[in-house]
Image (cartoon, rainbow, N blue to C red; front, side, top):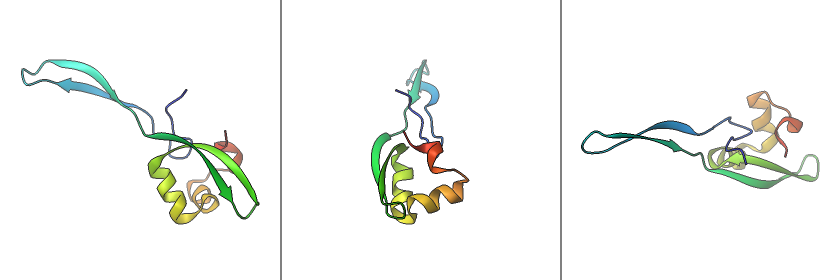
Length: 80
């Protein structure tokens, strides 16, 4: 399963763990990706989307279709 948000494009970041002795080992930070079912009142239907929790908070504030318009996306581009 891919760890990429379909709305924001957030993906894993890579870097190093650095110990007190300055030894470096590779690590990665994963985005908090959730699979959610969102109601679209304008169309009267549910859609499933894999999105980050940051995108979910923005959708709760603006609404899904307004958020997609602002990002220049279509609904069919982001549904699972």
